[in-house]
Image (cartoon, rainbow, N blue to C red; front, side):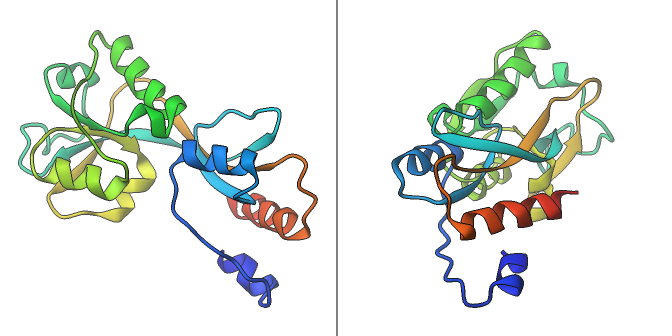
Length: 184
């Protein structure tokens, strides 16, 4: 957004916060011109381009028994309650997490879901459960939550730019170009 505003100061940008699933539907329906999504697959109507990848981290309550560890063995989370995104808000991302848990011998026991990262991390801080989140969210540094790397082979979660394939708008093209430039 900063690059866009710097290069095109007269361009009017309307910014809204939506989960990946909602953005993909809004793009296909023509209600959104461009989006920044996670772990999305392209469709016939929507192009998706990879920007960066980040590893999953364990998000734990600050007083959790594993909070002081340098690295978390995923099997140590098998008996934990989990706080996750609802699958409907990002099926691919949800499936990455549940597949990762299954690869380590368990299915996550989901006790709470949050429609946004702030809610999820608030539930973790309140001690309702643990979560697995892309490393980017560790930058939020919410009080009462610690982020720890997971040991072994950890899934990488893509941050992507998405737009309607049929959209020839110069503004969309400039946004995609700016996103590409910042991701290198």
